[in-house]
Image (cartoon, rainbow, N blue to C red; front, side, top):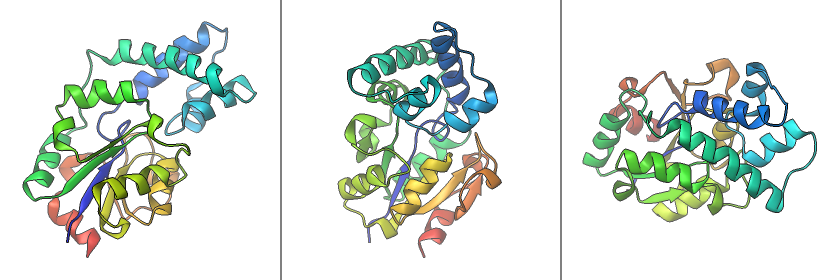
Amino acid sequence: MKKAVIFDMDGVICHTNPYHSMAFKEFFAKRNMYPTEDEFALHMYGKSNSYIMSHFFGRPISGNELLELEDEKESLFRDIYKDKINPITGFLEFFHQLKTNQFLTGVATSAPYANLELIAGALSLFGQMESVLASEDVTKHKPDPQVYLKSSANLQVEPDFCVVFEDSFSGVTAAKNAGMKVVGVLSSHSKLELPRCDLYIEDFREVDVEKVLGLLD
């Protein structure tokens, strides 16, 4: 029976949230807006850009306006982050352990493809993942399960045999809505701030293939 592990990217493969905060602060400061760290925690981490922009501007942001604003902010992020790409402790070792044990793997991120290219490219993940999905690949964002159901279809593995690693409320909810087992990565939130997960880790030294198989039994 084929089994799969699907990773979110921001806060799971790399701890990018502090750099997204820096990019958003710069982006909003240009417009004389100064959101607090608490507001970012509630309305940025794990959310789609359409939600974030609409929330902070106080009106719906969509279509070409969204594309232009998103491009500006994500370009700022890539400039800030490009020399600082560093996976969460133990990630690469765990990932290679999965591949050695014939797991199929995928990434399912709400970030744009250019961010995925930057990070997955730097970590040489593209050739090793059987499914790669970014924000451009879906019409409904997390907490909608679309990105995970699409990953399952790409991998040709039933949702019951997929384990997802997520760090945000909307991401965990999306994976659970897809009928998958979820490991909560506590990089940005505490256990109490996430929906109930099947397992929690601080970093990837706390998980191995046996634990993943245990979740699927």
